[in-house]
Image 1 (cartoon, rainbow, N blue to C red):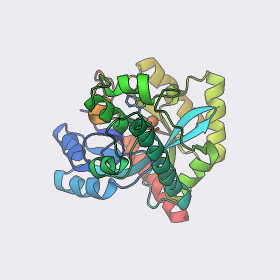
Image 2 (image 1 turned 90 degrees about the horizontal axis):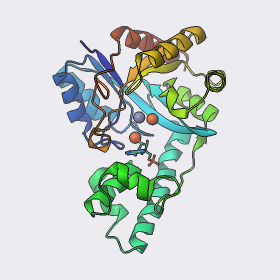
Image 3 (image 1 turned 90 degrees about the vertical axis):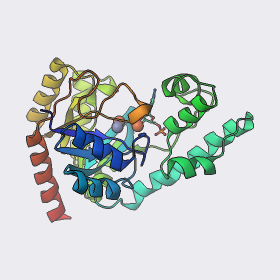
Image 4 (image 1 turned 180 degrees about the horizontal axis):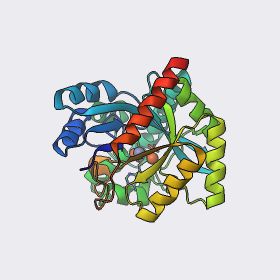
Length: 281
Ligand code: AMP
Ligand code: FE
Ligand code: FE
Ligand code: ZN
């Protein structure tokens, strides 16, 4: 039986299931624990923790922060407690970016108001929300299509946001009480040497783990990542990157085709690391 999913998005960022519904789904699937790792926010934690209590699912408060090192790199932070001001600044920057995107759409005559989007989708709005609006307006067939034609990099309604450097973000997660983990390492299309360089750089800033199991990663890829984690003395984590209907091919707890299976022992190690970290800060 599958035990865990340590990479999950909710409506607190760009997922489509509320924190409570996500935890309920996890309980129905028999998952023992899930980590809520919304982009740049911890606003989903309270509701998820309370639902975890109701449904008997262990909820790990987490976050996923976008950073850059040549390409866009994501760092997960587990058992994060409070966001230091730098991380809060990311939310403000995202807000300003979103206002510009909405203004571009409105200038094209589309009935888009950022204020109304916030009323509907909540505090942390991302490009997938704009994608949904474009689908509803009949301009795109799916969120993915909206990315390809409108909100993806370089497209008509693309406005970049300020992304903090990787070392700074790893340190910010540690200062916020989180155990930093490098997310989906194959997404960066790096060679073995380049990935090692990235891991070593992150470790200099306090990286503690590597996401070894992830939706779509095959047995060979998983074995490679687990070996890397062991070699570097890093914790192993795994999760689906569930986003509800914004990434409909990804299933909570099981991945794309049932390939995801994350052992409970990995969470024990992660929790111990968080305990040690919290004793120090
Ligand atoms: P933002 O952080 O607002 O710039 O939006 C980036 C987020 O959009 C990523 O974290 C992904 O979760 C999501 N995303 C990227 N590409 C796609 C896609 N093709 N379809 C749906 N969601 C996507
Ligand atoms: Fe996302
Ligand atoms: Fe990610
Ligand atoms: Zn994610």
